[in-house]
Length: 228
Length: 292
Image (tube, rainbow over all chains, first blue to last red):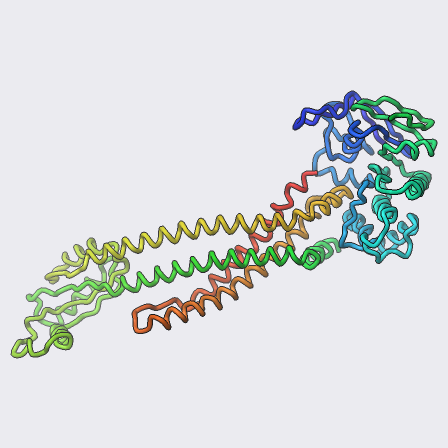
């Protein structure tokens, strides 16, 4: 669950107002597209959710953690309730597919037995069964992003936050990936997808929150992205 | 399980980032050898000056009124009790005459009795910097007629020793700073390529301790490898160089400190510096990447 109330974020180094008076709520189990043109403040909003930045003013609550006041040492615990998917996949190049996913479980101290059971199951779920031994460099962009999704999913997070997950993929692979995220959402995980790809958003009938020039300019529960 | 995994990760990292590990160890070895060689050179110069100082003896002449050799020998405890006297060797007037005749033309001494010589003590000092004060204390002993001490030589040795000490200290301190700077920057460079890896760890909820431990293990191992290799290289280098120096200047008073005499200290210092630089350098290098 995400709750933002009158959130303002100013980057002091450049004196840029990235977000101004943004309020929104994302309930558990929702699938939400967060859309807007480049430089609109989408990424800042996502960083507020992941705890990479703190709001200048206003309140941000993510999965019962108050991100405005959270102590640095509590951040790992909060992040374990999230699964983050990046545009550039961010896989560890010298680890194979299995280890890239297992690594996320090792971080939270999962026992080996559980890792051995869970990782193949998740890889099967994202359509990468049998590719455990491949290195990231041997996979296509779509497959690498599936590894990223498997890594985000493996610790059963309450919410998956995907930042432009289809940014480096062709339309067919992008659609496949969105269908995978929809499937994950149907299994009960909240999914927030940050994107600026109109066609993709409009292909799904999901809630769309629009951000422009740091302000929330739209919140449609029926879907549809009509911006530039 | 987790601790074992993190330690294994530290070791795995050394091989997966082979080139950077090699660069780190090489820089540690090079810096330690430069630092160590200057320290050993300074140690040898100090020992050489000490040797020369030891050859600078003080002669304490016993008063003629103490004619009896046994009575002259009785002065030994008084001389030895003076602070800064490290040893006192009694030389009777007969021995003094024999020594004189062996050094000079013995025909000069024909018909001359040994009574012209005084009983004496050859005294060595612990520190020649205090020679003039020691001379006064020796002269104050009843039965001592005169004390011959080369105060001007002593002063020169003290000045040389002080200059060498200051120059070596300044050089060593500068080298220590430069070496630490180079070594920590090499480690920083080695970890720079891994900031993405660290960012991923942070995003999946890794604690700072979880991220740091493999770096500490890696740094410790690389530091120990660097320290150990530098020790072996220094050993070989020292023996080759000192062998050549001694071989070239044979027949002189030049004595070099054998490496085995300082091997334990060199090993301990190299390992300590290697481990400190490796472990702290690793932790310090990733400090900024942990602030996400």
